[in-house]
Length: 485
Ligand code: ADP
Ligand code: MG
Image (tube, rainbow, N blue to C red; front, top):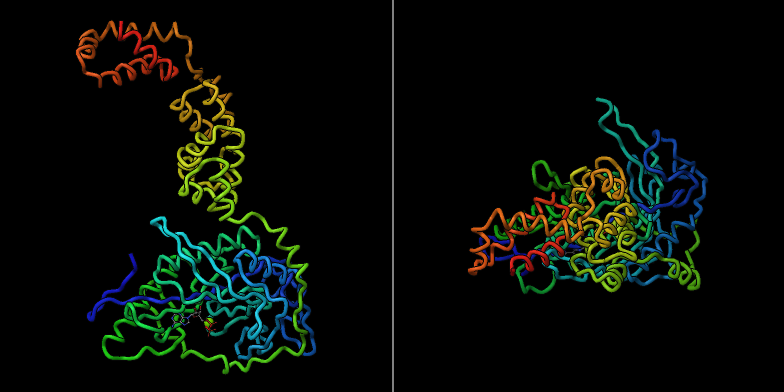
């Protein structure tokens, strides 16, 4: 089902392209040796290059280039062996040089694609137009003093990758799924931490609308610096509604840069959109063109970690998990690693069910993430081993897991402490059953005259009498035998 907005004149389709700015994981900045670490006392991670001192020369950080190449490879994209740095000229108080060094005409990465997963289980391919390297600007701080603004240059010169998508996105859901997938891939690659609250990933959201079936695109507006997936989705909805109304009233949408106010749920004009020629781009005379070797690209490729799509396929193959389950398990690398520690050499079906069921529930309950799980992967595996070798049954295992979460004790220790070992002694089971049958003679005769459903009642009574510790298979088998007598 395609996503549509209904206006007075009928249905409208939305068209969205995203420019995602992702902060590169690196020790130093793109062209200086200053620390690229987030935070820090204001203006402590600043070199003379970042501060735009006259005569300072930028020196390209090779690790930043490697990160861009890795990311390009992870997006199945063309890696350009020739690329170039340009100056994008504009004045802003937090940009001391008066220009940003970026890649305009020759980006390091060309076209690629991202496959996004939608809620109904379908997938869509979103084209990537390009990825280029650029410097981040500093930060203006307006809320610390009533009359003055401050500048913090710690972020100035930090390396960003700008990842531009084709206008292939057709719904807020697809936009959300695209950013989520992109973030997942970058995190797996270790090229960006994807932390949107700290601003290490933010999106410029380009939105236009058109009538379904219409050729070409109408004028777009660009909503700047949207810093959460939820806001990306919301601003598209709000902005598309605004544009539909303008077109329907006989107006024209102006190409503008806007900002999203999530409190008032509206977008507001920031400035009319500048065109590329307004920036007077030209090749940065302080930097040579960037030429990389195919053999280096091949080396980086060979060293890439397993990416989410491949991991998904492998988990399905090796552990027999379903498509849905593999999606949940690879959402974060730490979850997939945890799962594999639990499932390796164990009953994989049991491991999957427990991981996605009781274990995740326990995590949720305690508000912990997988990284600080109260139960380690090997402890969970020990618990499951106790089920597999019939030491305890599944129901008791749930109780043991709760105890593990609370006390941090091992499964085996809890089973011993609480005397939860499963009763597999057929003599003990028979004694319990005979007593139940004797006390429920009326139900026994009802059962015998055809009321099969009562079997569950007898199982329940027996388990209760045995404090839940009866081996379920044996209890069933024994009950059948004794009821047939
Ligand atoms: P600029 O730097 O001027 O914003 P870019 O070419 O870098 O231009 O980025 C344009 C972005 O806008 C891309 O993500 C592209 O997919 C998207 N886009 C282009 N035209 C439209 C349109 N008519 N409707 C929606 N998105 C569009
Ligand atoms: Mg833009």
